[in-house]
Structures are given as C-alpha cells and as structure tokens.
Image (tube, rainbow, N blue to C red; front, top):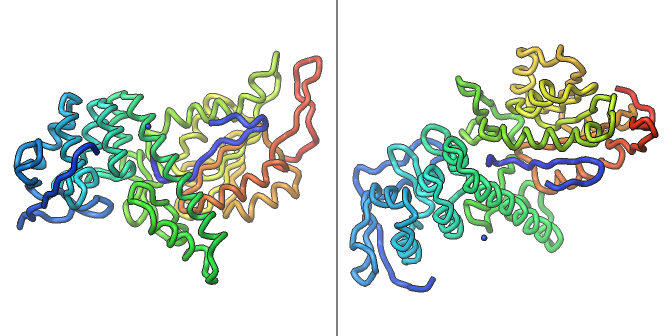
Length: 367
C-alpha cells in the first residue's frame, strides 16, 4: 500500500478489525542514531519496563523483532504494547535496517500480529532503509491475508482523513488556504493515518530506483511501488469489463488512466486488454519525460496528456471523448480532489446500450 488516492471508476459503479496498565521508560543508547529519511525514530537499544510488568524487565530491539516472527509470542507483544512506554514500540524502527515490528510480522505471515500492531498505531506506510514497506514484505512472501490487512489500513486512513478534512472545512471560521486546512486536519491524526497530501509535489524531483520497481519523491516517500502490480491487474480487468463481458463483443475498450507513475496498469492494459483508445494524464514533468523516453507516445492507441487532470479533463469533455472505464491514481492530492474528479464521470463514461448483435451502441466520440 503506498500513499496514494486511488480508485476505480466504471459505469455501473463496481466497488472496489487493554486489559492491563503499567508504566515504563526507554533508556537512550549513546550509539543510537536516526536512520536516513522516511524511517521513523529508531528503537532504543533496550526497552525497560517496570518490574510489575508481566514480561521480562528488559526487552531488546532484537528480541522484539524476533517475537514478531511468530504468533506464539502474541501475549508478550500485547503486554508490551499496552504498557505506558513512550515512544510507542509499535511505531519504532531498527536503527541499522529501519525494519519495524509490523514489517517483521508481515514478512512471516503473522496476520494476528499485523492486526494487533496496526491497532496500536504501527505506521502501515513506513519504509525501511531499503525503501521497502510492510506491504512489500508481505507480498514478497505471498502472505495475501497480511496484504489485505495493510491495504484496509491504508484505505481506512484515507477515509478518516477525508472525513476530518470535510468537517474542518465546514466548521472553520478563520479564512485559510486549502493547504493550511489540510495540514490542520493532518496534524490531528496519528502518523499512520496522516495523508500523503503534498502541495509541492509537482515541483519536487522524482527518481526511479535502478531496478525500476519504485518511484520516490525528494523525501524518499514512495509514489508508486512494484508490489502494487497484482492490484493493478485486477483494476485493469474491472475497468475493461464493460466491453469484454458483452456477448460476442467485437470492440476494444477505451480507457483513461489519471497518474502514470511506474506505468504498471498502463502496461497491463496494453499487453492484456489492447484498448482502442488509451488516454494517460500525467502532471509531473519527470514522469512525463520518462514516458517519452520509453516511447509510450508511440504505443497503439495511446494518447498522452501532460498536465493536471483539472485542466485536461474539461478539454476531453469538450472534445466529446468518452471511456468504458477509468482508473484514478494520483499522488500528493487531497481526498476532496478525488471527489471533485468523480463529479466529472457522468461526462467521461460512455452510456452503452446492447444491441442484438452484442455490440455497444454509444454516443459518437472523438478519440
């Protein structure tokens, strides 16, 4: 799960889980140092709890990560998380690798531990020193249940942010910019619930990792990651299903993707669904240059629109261009932006009627 506002749009609207209290302290270690960007504050070498705690009086970082390898250690971890330790062990990361308890639990397929850690504030979107998040660890080892839990956590975080932001906009009595309102809403949330909203995203320099499996911004936050491919494959199936599900269909789907990133869904659409019209809106200049360098502008049916969707979409509507399915996966925007985009769907999505021959009879469009 990376920090995106994403969603599938198609005509029929298919959619897409403390018994004890004690106190404790953390002893700082003089050799402990903060890892590089986007890694949360590291574990101190030892987490010390009071003698009254039902766990060992000292817990090292190594021990905690080892505990997260097996669900048989669930009672000890629960006891540690429910003590009054600051900072919260669920939010911390190893200083040398950046690995967190959540990453370890996800790597070993311990779904109950993943749930417990998320419930106690473990950031679902934290990255280690190698740019991997808990979702990467779960995907690499084919632990689908853990992947689902992490995806759910990310979706809930974005929905919570949206509700907080809407309430903030409705109740605010002091004039402020949308960025200030978004920042205020963000500040009231825990780290794991905070939005990826970045007003300066389009002015930041982006970089693709050497293996082309990650796209990172200047703060080393993941814009898109390769582990999303299975999800993108399903998205591609859904947004083309309005055509492919028709009996004896003879037409190719017309699709729109807002936000190219690594081009995962676009590659799948090109190789598996062969769209007759494939419009891609991309606003970031670095991504656009990469698209041109990789000859996306010469692929069959592809039309690249460089610019913000807020500018491009009205132009498409004016031209009368319509689509069988739309995928929206931007970065650095607010939840309200996605809602604004959804308001344009009535003009972008085709209104089909099925003839006796099983083909679509649609309004005339330009493409």
